[in-house]
Length: 273
Length: 290
Image (tube, rainbow over all chains, first blue to last red):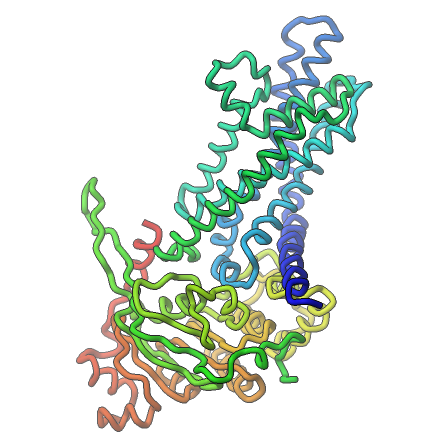
C-alpha cells in the first residue's frame, strides 16, 4: 500500500473510531435518549397544534400542519447536528479524554467529520421517528409525500450543517464555560432567518438577504415541497447547499484550527474536572 | 516483536542518530488573572518553564521531580503537542513539537494522574476507541486489547464493565494498557501512581520496569514521589518553580550535595523542605479557565 493509501486508511479507521464511540455511548444512554425523544415529540406537538387552532378547511389545516411539522423536524435535526458538533470538545473535556484525543495522530477533518457523520445518522433516525410519531398522533395526511427526495435533500444539507457546526465546535475550546451554549445560539439564529415556521418572504428585506446564505433555507423549502406536494429533488435547492458546503467545511476547519492554536497557547486543552 | 509492540511497530521507523528528547531553552508563560482586580481583569505573567534544557537518550528512563506547580505537567503537555511554547525548542526523535506535531503524535503516548476515560464505556471499548486514532482496525484490537489488558493484570471478566465501576488502581492499569497499546517509542508518565494504594502503586511500578525490559521505549517520568523516581529512573532531575536545577544519576546528585537522600538534595538545592511548597494547582486552574 502506498504511503498516501496507508495514511488515508489510518485516518478512516480514526473516523470510524469516533462513530464507534458514539454508538457505544448511545447504547449506554439509550433510556435517556428515549426520554429526550418524548420531549422532542411533545415540543413539536406544541407547534403543529397551531394548525388546528386557525379554523381552516380540513385540507388547508392538513397542509399547514405538514408545513409546520417539516419546520419542527428540521429544527430538531439541526439541533442534533449542532449538539454533537458543538459538544465535540465539551464532552471530551467533561470525560477528561480531551488531551488524549488532541495528542492522537488523527487529522482534525476526520475527528470532526466522524462526529458529524454520526450526528447525521443519528439525527436522521430521530427525525424519522419524530416525523411519523407526530403524523400518527395528529392524523396528518401526506399522500403525495416524496420521502426519498426529502431524505436526499436533508443528507445534502447535512454537509453544510456539519461545516457550520465545525465553526461552532470551536467555541468550547475558547470558552470552556459558555462556549457550548453559544453554539445553540448560532443554531437558533440560523433557523430564525431560514423560514422555519413561516415563509422567508414575511421577514424584513435584510433578513431575507441573510436567508440566502443559510443552508436551512433550502433544506426547509425543498423538504416542505417534497412532503406536501411530492416534489422531487430540485436543482435550485441543491446547488446552493453544495456551494455552502464547499465553502463552510474548509472555513469551519480553518476556524477550528485557529481555536486549537489559541487553546494550545493559553493552556485550554485540558480537562475541567 | 517486543511483548507490547503493535503490528505497525514504530521503533524501527524513528531516527536512530538523534536523542529521544532534546529540549533547549524551553520557556512557557501563562497569564493568570489577578485576584480582586476589579472590572479591568488584570493578568500577570506566571512562568511555568524557565529556560529548561536537557536531553534524554533513546531507551533511557528519566524522572523529573518537582512539587505541584513546578512545571512538570507543562513539560509533559509541551512534549505531547498539547501546548505551544513561548521560547526555545523541544524535539522528539528529531521532530519539532510544534512544526512536526503530527509525526510526534505517532511516536508518543502518555499516562497522566487522572485515568481519563469515557466512564460509561468499558475498558475494552475505551481501548478500542483509543486505538482507532492510531490506525488500529477492529481486526487488530479484537486480540490486541485483551492481550494488553492481561499484561497489566486486568481481570478478564471485568473487561466489559463500565470504567466508573472500577477502582482507581484498576483504571490506572487500563490507562497504562492504553498507552502501551499504540507501542509508543516515547512514553510520558505524569504522576502515574499518585493517589493509588500502596499495592496498586507497586504493581504499576513493576509494570513500568517490565516495559523497560521488553519494549523499546524511552520513558519520561514526572513525579513528586522521590522513592519512585530513585527506584525507576536512570537519571533524576529536579524542576523547581519552572527551573531545572539538575538532571543526573541519583548517586551523582547525592555526591554533588553531600547528602544521603533526594529530600536532602532538594533542601540543599532550593533551601526549602520538599513538603513546604504550597499547592498552586488551583492557580493554574484559574489561569486556564479564567
